[in-house]
Amino acid sequence: MTPETRPLPISDALSLTRRAVADTVHRTGAERGRPRGIALLMVLVMTGIIAALSVQFTYHTRTNIWMSGNLLASTQAQFNARSALRIGLLAVNAKKNFPEMQKFLSLMGKAAAQRLEVWQRACDFVNIFATGKAEFFGMALLDFTSEKAVGGKRPPVPQSRIDFSRLAGSEDGAEAAASQPAPFSCKVSAEDGRVNLNRAATEVAPVSLNAGGQNLQQAATAMLAQQQRAAAQLYVQLGGLLAPMAASGLFENEEAAVELILNIIDWTDADDQKSEIDQNGNFVASSGAEGGDYGQYGYQAKNAKMDTIGEVQLVEGMTSDVYCRIRDKLTVFATDKVNVNDADVAVIKGILCQAVQNDIERAQLCLAPGVRGIPPMDEAIIAMESCRRIKKQVYSTPFMSMARFNEFFRQYPTAMGTGVPFNINTSIVDQQLGVTTKMVRLEAEGVYGHTKRKMVAIVDTSTGAMVNFHYE
Image (cartoon, rainbow, N blue to C red; front, side):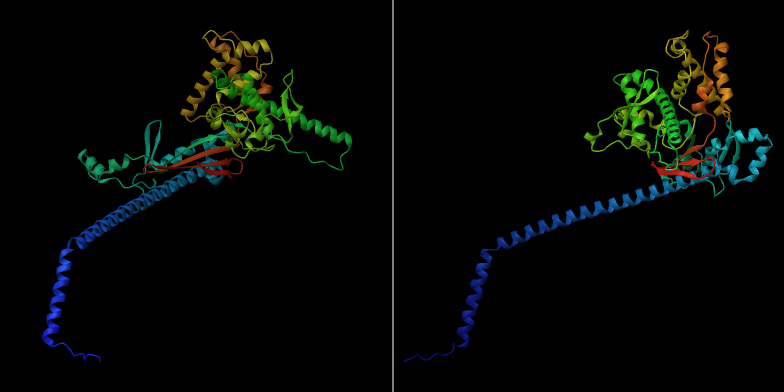
């Protein structure tokens, strides 16, 4: 028989409840330390995470601020350089852009007006706009510093420098602002004063179906003679640049320097035959392959014109030391004759020595030490360079004609009393040297704080157009 279930009295139920609560509180109190330890550990972990996030956030914020500042400075420096370039281009093309200037120059005489090269003073105009001041032989002529249109953008002057300037006597801190470098500047030079690496470049001659056999042979013979003459000229000009380096030990021997020149010629000519020099000093094409094992580098000789000066580093035998010494004396643009007013003295010496056709006289002039311990040709070159610098300082063109250049070296032995005549074949000199500037290199630099940007433009003086523009 199933026993009958009866509900507990209320007093008994409350008694049981009190005992259960008391037992639960007793057990929780016994393990009181464990929940507190876990909470402390979680707080430490969260604090570390928040600290790491804060450091990372601060780093990224500062990085973004620095990047924004660098971008601002770079952009402003670029626009400052652009200002210098545009002003310089106006000055280079002054004769074309300003007919009134042509009328003014005509007062000097037609011949003098044609020979006067205004581009040489282009950077003087740029400097006026950069500084607001015009000087002539150290004398202040004009002051436009108060004009808003003059001068480029400069970074704000720190308050500390302004305070120091005020202590020095300047009330508005103008001296502190003026002490900053000019926002832009430029440098102008004749591109014709550089050696053209593409002088000996050739192209595959088109075959004319209408030309007769004899006419075609005559044309091929004339073209070959012209190519050999251009190669010989490039050989002499590069030889003048590399001769001092070979003497100083940058090449293993003189043959290594000659091999480099031949490799440059082979790089730009259209054929795959190696260029050589015969016993008479004439350029000939051998039956062998072009010099330089370019297969080990993963490329072949270009057999076409170089597009940039840096491309010459791909030529076999061109080391970094040699390239760094001659890169500013080279060009890849279609210049004609080397301008004696801006050419490197080593190039001029090489051409002059090559124009001395007697071997004994060439050795006496260019190799044997003279009375002053150096070859007579070196003495004349040093004197010529001194004249060039003095004339440029007084805003004058060193040599207005090749006749005056040749006359300088013809009269030098008599004037200096060296006693060694300079028997130079002037017709050979005139084939490679000249006084006409067909292309101008304009280098504009913009400054904003410690940031600098540089633009380079090559300008054709006959048309006034830029044939090349790039950043450096």
